[in-house]
Amino acid sequence: MAKKQFKAESKKLMELMINSIYTNKDIFLRELISNASDAIDKLHYKSLTNRKIKVNTNEFAINVSIDKENRKLIISDNGIGMDKDELESNLGTIARSGSLLFKEENDKKENIDIIGQFGVGFYSAFMVASEICVISKAYGAEKAYKWVSKGIDGYSISEGTKDSYGTDIILTIKDNTDDEDYDKYLEEYTIQSLIKKYSDYITYPIKMNISRSELKEGTNDEYETIVKEETVNSLIPLWKRPKNKISAEDYDTFYSDKFFDYEKPMKVLHFSMEGRISFNALLYIPAHAPYDYYSKEYEKGLQLYSNGVLIMEKCSELLPDYFSFVKGVIDSPDLSLNISREMLQQDKVLNMIAKNVENKISKEITNMLKNDRENYEKFFDAFGLQLKVGICNNYGMDKEKLQDFLLFHSSFNNNYTTLKEYISRMKEKQETIYYACSESVDKARMLPQTEAVIEKGFEVLYLTEYGDEFVMQTLSEYEGKKFANVCASETNLDSDEDREEIDKLNKDNKEMLDVMQKAINDVKEVRFTRHLKDHPVCLTSEGGISTQMEKVMQVMPNSDGIKATMILEVNESHPIADKLKKLYKKDKQELENYSKILYAQARLIEGLPIDNPTELSNLICKELS
Image (spheres, rainbow, N blue to C red):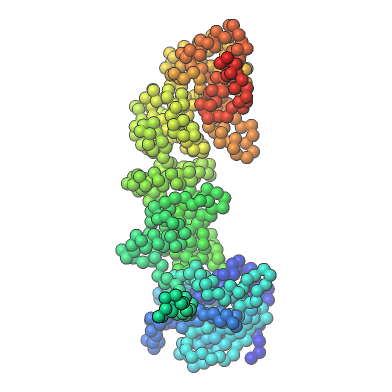
């Protein structure tokens, strides 16, 4: 029969179908299997509405076979099939979807799950095939017809031979090139893997002849290759099964197989939504962070299915960044897909699903915090940093969603506490939440300023991670209570009388304190204080940058010169105060040396580096000798 041109009237359009719309060659098999599933769906539906059509639904199946020698890959179905006119209209016209037309004609009576929408999926096969042959026989027809095309140049239709109704799609796989390995599409393992990845939950059995190495009967060590027809796909996805028929082991096995985690998940969230939008969800909160979780290489996202067909391996739009640790799948028939079904169109449906997912995760975490504190603390150890990053991102826009999830070590019982729990224990008329920053709980606890605040009867939160103080600044307050760093110069718990006395002491010794400040130079001011108990000195910070924040920012790129404004405070009741006064009167050079040693000591207490350790060592040795 004479060759015909495609009715799309444009060679360029065909090139677009083959080379531009799809970015991943592997999905051709997903598209062809989806088309086969649609064909069976159509026949199934017709059998329900037309008594003359008699079919055994238990025999519905899709068969995939490989003829490696002749470079053929065959996908067969026993669906409704096509006559000559349907082959002409469905395959001869690019972007005409027979499945969509069928859905539009019948959907008024009943919802029908038809996968194909755009009529271009079939042509994705030209990405891997040099020729496609379609042999189809419509249900109830006497003749079969054969459609053959090598792509852009057109197609031919002639009578064919087929014993039963349905469709066979025979791909002649391309030869390898320098850039592409097409031989893999003739490998049993590759095809089986692609079916499991993209079409595992097609509702009809997908059958293949699978080669297995088995022990030869009657022998102990001889093996032979046995070829058996096996169903490759799982058919019904776990998330669509009744919950009362799913065991904890089923959930764990699915998680391990899908997400390659050796440890059981901490929590499983299995739920569905019906109404304006419909979807099924199976989500997991892992027990630990992946090795690359806090790196640029980590990709967040849930596996996204449409009617059981994998659309995206990691759909990032379904999870906010602060819940990026969640793994799982979403399956919805309501998604607006683009023409290649490789990406989603941004629309209200996707946003509504994402919102529901976020709310469900939030409720589960809240429930864990209230009713399973031990596990929650393990969860927070693994993912608390991500929650803190979520508070700081977007200028604190999400802080109210996340602030109640935060845990901090506390002076109350040296265990974790929430901000809400801290508030519940606050003293009457206390308006401030106090915190201390250091590399560890022990170091934060031993800061002179921490001891002074605790001695006054106030609870102190210990912030031990680099970003913690940025979190406090972003939050600004919690339930109307302001946050205050115990090491900030503004944090002063002295009485009015004590303040007046210390102000007078500093004025009386201003000249001496100025000499000390000039000797150090790095501090804005040296002054006496009364809140250090037994400690001789400490550093306090003034303004928005604390000493702890300085340490964080110094390791960041392009942060040179960002330093805290520091004040060296000297305990006026410590013997060192009298020593300094004597040195001022007798030996100002010695006073400068003492000032440098005291400043270095204060830096060490704060966990700050010493700029000139050699000078410090020499000064100490000189004083000791």
